Image (tube, rainbow, N blue to C red; front, top):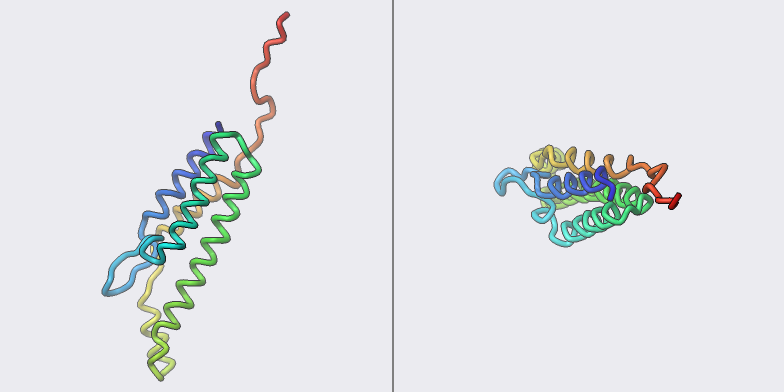
Length: 135
């Protein structure tokens, strides 16, 4: 079992529950507040990362770390585009930018990034287990 991979997966799971976006009237949102389907996909990546860490699959752990980073960037872009599209009924571009600028990113993204970086830097063990030669 790779302890660093387990710690990275747990940190990512905690980061998904931290505040990711602040919407002025509605408050702070985590992954499930942004979109329940995105939250499910994110936690599927977390479960795969945890399973790969438990069963010593270093390649899968690294893949899950990279997948989490790519999915996090896609989510950031989706939040940005959605906030700009949500206020498109306003006909003045400066008011659209003002209204969409009220949606703020929070500190939970850094927690997810820390967990993903921990998964990416998991190393292979040079000598996995001591083998009894019987001599």
